[in-house]
Image (cartoon, rainbow, N blue to C red):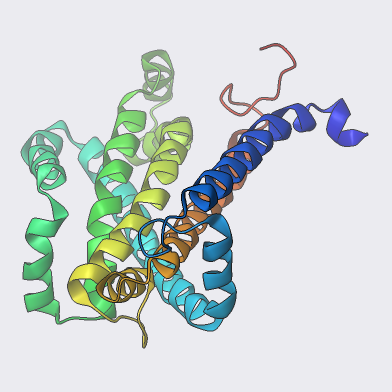
Length: 266
């Protein structure tokens, strides 16, 4: 009854029905066409691959999760601290921010081999690659938020002789929270991609191969159902990270910001 009353059921049922319909059609069409599993597996083949390889899949998910968390944490700290430094002085922002934009435009696959040469293959290089992919959205979003503070409120702080850092900590950073949370939502998904891309380039990390390594392994041996299973696990990992950050967003902004306020009016 609570699900119906608060409207959650109406939000859950449509995507659930679409998922069941798509998977059912996939199973029916591929089964009727008689396509071999190595070319296009049925959903039942993928489930079978997950069940028969669940130990290695869990190990790969654990490794990629560890790499993603480390890369994400470094991205958040680096992005927020970097944005605060840039926002503290227009001269620093004009001098440094263009290079952050240049960093964002460089394809990570172009610099990943250099990172491997500098830091060796393995966990350290993979975390750095995940950090580089997640860093720029955090920096850009946080900087936009810090620069979007209401000028009238800044004038009020100036009128009461607040120092630059008092204005930063007590006004600009709290006002930038919605933008910071927006950066977190973008960065968390990108760090999952960064960790998997890092595993393609830097190989085994964290003591055993992650999902990127498992995908490469399955592709080389044309184990297509296992390949789909690895992709499914990567997708679920990205969704889990996004939902975790969304939960944090609701806790931080749910009581005051329009983006998280619950309303019955669409």
